Amino acid sequence: MADLAPLSVASKFKWNWLKIVAMMIAAILALPILVVLVNVLIGDGEVWQHLYQTVLAEYISNSLLLMLGVGVGVLLIGVPCAWFTSMCNFPGRTFFSWALLLPMAMPAYIIAYTYTGVLDFAGPVQTLIREFTGWRYGEYWFFEIRSLGGAMVMLTLVLYPYVYLMSRAAFLEQSENTLEVSRTLGYSGRAVFFKLALPLARPAIVTGLTLALMETLADYGTVQYFSVNTFTTGILRTFYGFGDIAAASQLAGVLLLFVAVLILLERRSRHRIRYHASGLKKASNRRMVLKGGRGLLATLFCSLPILVGFFIPVIVLAYWAMFKAEMPGSNFIQLAWNSFYLAAIASLIVVSLALVLSYAIRLNNGKTVKASVGVAGLGYALPGTIIAIGTIVPLAWLDHRIIDLVKHYSGERVGLLFSGTLVALLFAYSVRFMAVSLGAVQNGLGKIKPSMDMAGRSLGMSPFKVLVRVHVPLLKGSVLTAMLIVFVDVLKELPATLVLRPFNFNTLAVRAFELASDERLVDAAPASLMIVLVGLVPVILLSRSISSRTGY
Image (cartoon, helix red, strand yellow):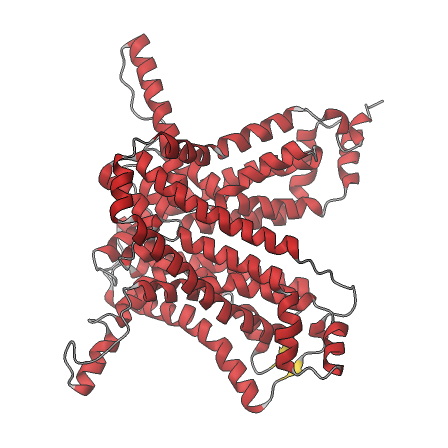
């Protein structure tokens, strides 16, 4: 008779091989963060002293101002749009409920290139102003797109969906009875929003805001193109310009402190105030009807973010790509292929590791495994520049040790095996996007009853066979979703790719950045448009998932 001891969720196998493997994977994925922290302490301080005396204050002030501007912007757009689409009835509400997610498909650096081409001095808007008025340069005021303010606007347009998603989910979960009681007490619709619904949704709003601000700190393409000196531009400039990894790591350590503060604030917000659903009817079952001018204002308010954040940039990119850009040749095909297979391999690796880590938690639901997997998921909160620096240092060290060892024993000279190859890039992607994959896989595993594990184990299957033969087929939807999201994130990733890509190896994101940096915005359109169109796929799937789950 088969041994049934493992049926108690593997309690007798607390230190099985899967737990050890999971902890080893987590330790390896945490290596870039540890490297950055160690280099902060061992730097000689000469370059750091120079940075401190010259540009550090500018990096800090610009990063803080950028966070402030983007934070205010995403709140002003995301929260009202979430309220209108979840709690009100007005013309176009059904369309806006999912269409407001579309700007998520638009990388910030691409929308920055597009609006620069449209709004810059030589762009069509200012050209028309000069033609119609006869004014010359300096005789009229126009918003300077290549500025800190321009970076705030560009990032706000693509990051507000984080706040919108979280806020809408919170509003949809609020009880109709709670809001009805407030109305019987004489609260107006505005008072219900500000005094009741908004405080109840505050933890969710803060979570969405934290995600948007972490993405703001991680941005490189937009701030670099607009010549706004922030930590991300400073880290790469120090790394390439001074060749000082320790100084770059020290800058990365300061940026890491910013990220840690954001995470702590978000967790403290959820810890201090907790609201629980009453299990009664949802508030969205009885929406407020907005008629006449109020309904028109709601429609216009929800239309503007989609129009400015998605449709106008896509139309401009499509026009440039079809009528003005150079015809894509074999080089473009090679770039598309490089991007495709790199993203495909990375998504396979990341999801496979996420399956192992998630299943280890399922079998060994202890603090050690949970903490290890939690550390493995920290990468998504870190900018690609930090992960790139933390990746290249240990891999370069390992390469040189292998080169010295081979030369000592055989006299042969071997090239780089890890750093400067796709191995480094794939490792950085695994660190950066593990959290995305872990979330999807753990959510899917949570829906599978423990009895399925027991059935497999009673048939004599090992834990690994249960995972492969039982769970993976049941997790098909979650696994495909995770792979798709990681695929698109890798396709859009810029700073880590710029630092770690092999010599003479380009992707669509890097090529678009290079062309835009050379002021060839029109020629960057085909690569940019391809990235946006591929990015639409997970956004559409996400909106469909939300609609099917909520029924709204």
